Length: 102
Image (cartoon, rainbow, N blue to C red; front, side):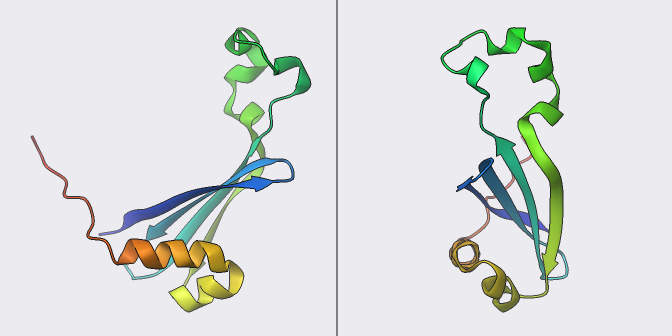
């Protein structure tokens, strides 16, 4: 069964880049990436941000397209993004959470 390994948020020129890495059933690594935008100047310091209808759409918060990249192994991921690969390597050495059906 596949599972989510890590979710990493890093600064990006257009906002905050969010990479979520999954271990697939075939022992590969799937990286889903998106960039969450920085709030526009009119929104700074306002607590009523949700009163503006344009903020209700998820497209407002995401810059560009979401991407999915699959890497065959950790070394392949490491050549593309060493920092992310180190976090994935650490997550692989931790036992997955047990899911209880209560």
